[in-house]
Length: 249
Image 1 (cartoon, rainbow, N blue to C red):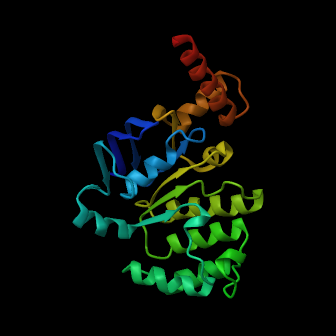
Image 2 (cartoon, rainbow, N blue to C red):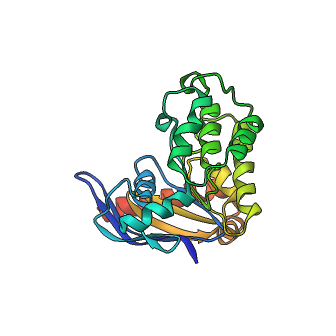
Image 3 (tube, one colour):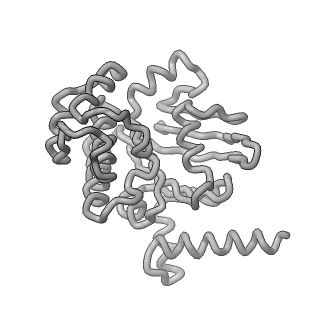
């Protein structure tokens, strides 16, 4: 079963269209979503989580149609979400648990406290006093403390120093390795992070999926082109797409 599946999803704005998006996050796998700013990555994530109404298509999470409001509310209990740091309430770290405990029926106090200790988060500080890396660790601790089966993350490692990024990537890798039913979708500009842990990669440009492939297949293409890494392959691919766009005008 696919943990998340999008079928021909279209979302229309006045000056932007997310067009005919189809891809899946297989159960037990990690899918990386890459693309330039404004390509549509965040719109995809918001559409999946039901915070953004899409015009056409079907999105299912754990087999449940996202437009079935009554059932989908239950499904979201099993989804841990990490957005940008601005989504965290401005409270003290120690007070965050009460909010999430009220929202999630499977909240696990011990898991949360252990993660706070593991991430060395200062519980007496307010969220606004934390560094960006600490805020992201807090958001991840909250997402991992209610027995989630799926993690959906929007730029979880953006703007972080390499050590913090590595710590977060390792925690995501362990999340999937610990249970074969666990799955992750995350967007990132940092292709080296995608290369480290993803099983599949989706590249989006101007609201359209340009490719969705297994990472092993992409790495074979990297070797065939004699490129040093996946980042160089995606940069080269993006340049080809833009060149073709220019030629079409």
